[in-house]
Amino acid sequence: MIGISACLTGIACRYDGRSNLVQPLDQLIQQGKAVAFCPEVLGGLTTPREPAEIVGGTAEDVWLGNAKVITISGKDVTESFQAGAKRALEQAQQAKITVAVLKANSPSCGSQMVYDGTFSGNKIIGSGLTAVLFRQNNIQVVDEHTCGFLLEENKLL
Image (cartoon, rainbow, N blue to C red):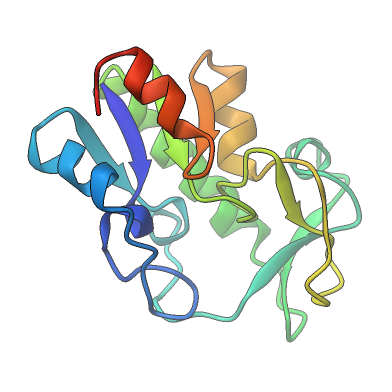
């Protein structure tokens, strides 16, 4: 089973109230080959919501208590991001997810790059909180830009 960031399946749960529909990923949901989830919504955040970035370190640092997830206005939403990641992991484990296609650049779901914590649009190498937690629990993580080969190789597309 595959897990997919809900925004990639057309669900309007992004911070700005929009989605990032990737039609082939939504088709996997329709075919019963995947399940969708949004860690930020699972953590109790509303849609829309202020943009947030990891500040003071990496997602790993957030899990260790050495960095935070902060909104553009300075509100600390670390606990919501952590709670959402944990709930997403619980859902993934219940559904026996082995691969997750997560939204690129997100402070929750980014798998290769995230925004640098300055709200300037600059990206750095790193992952989001959910991506880190999934990898620590042996769930392979890719994003919507790198998932094609993996899904084709497993005859899912």
